[in-house]
Image 1: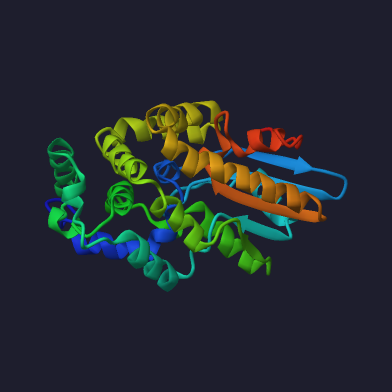
Image 2 (image 1 turned 45 degrees about the vertical axis):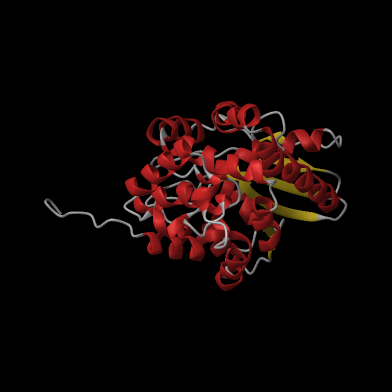
Length: 306
């Protein structure tokens, strides 16, 4: 409505929304793939042996409600699959809230004491730009502050975890009475962040600060790459800088998880039937992707034609 002023997003609102949607955290690199055009054509791969078929779909965890992304290839994969696999259970909000309280808060050691004067100025400016009070972030550990900085601008701009790819796929799976499995537990996913060494945990926050300062141009590039199925560009934009600038973080949030998921896929291949696995698109891009980890196990993932 013309002339209507948008109310600022208060610090406690940011935190409360984060707690309700924290299962969407995964990796920072995945969450920032959230702004897509009205239509998209996500990349999808297939892995087969004599009696098993596994579809591998790159996703985003948070989207605007009006985003259209379903394609015939995705519908075919979902229709054929007996099970849907996603990264983590996003339905147990109370469990995730408890884990964030346990692993994400450190009131005895305020956040401001963990940042240099220059970093603190940057952080407070980023928080204020969201309409939040920097003082409310003082009990946050750096990883939780970084996650908040990555998610909050998207929530403020109208993106909704309930509109994310996994949530829509899960709804379709339930409609078809298909079981929903997870590659990781909630605690595993939280601890990928919480167990980072202090230096790398701080780097996670600094990487979030870097992203907030260039969000518009970065998202424009990501939107274009994702919508055209340009996996190479997604890897360049999302993974390459992290690998060079924050190698420990890159290893913890991408490489180790991709290796673990490749192992789980190898185990699934020993069974039989058809499944669909949906994971963040950044995990399916670059030299350390899930497909690359599968190749090291002599398992081929073939990309389906557009």
